[in-house]
Length: 113
Image 1: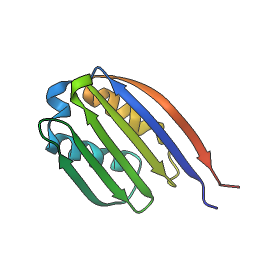
Image 2: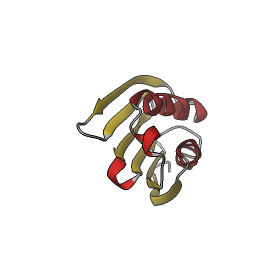
Image 3: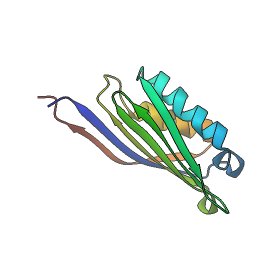
C-alpha cells in the first residue's frame, strides 16, 4: 500500500469575513495544494444559507476538504495525501492565512511499508 498521510484539524478564532468568502476559501485550497506540490484536479464548493461553506480540492494524490463554522469562528480541515510532503504544512498555512489557532485532531500515516 502507498504511504498516505491523514491530517484532521480544527482552526479556531478565525476571521469571520474570511470564513464567509468562498473565493478566498477556494484560492486557499489551491495554494495549499501548490504548497505541498500536489496535483489539483478540481475544486468544488457550496455556500450555505445563512452562513458557512464546504469546499473540496480534488487532488491526483487524494483531497483537501474544509467545512466552515462561522457561528464559532472555526474551520474543520481534512487532508488526505499520498504526496511526499508533510500534510501538517497545509494546516499551518491555513492557520496563518485565516489568523486563527490550529489544533491537530489526527495525524496518521497509513501504509508505506
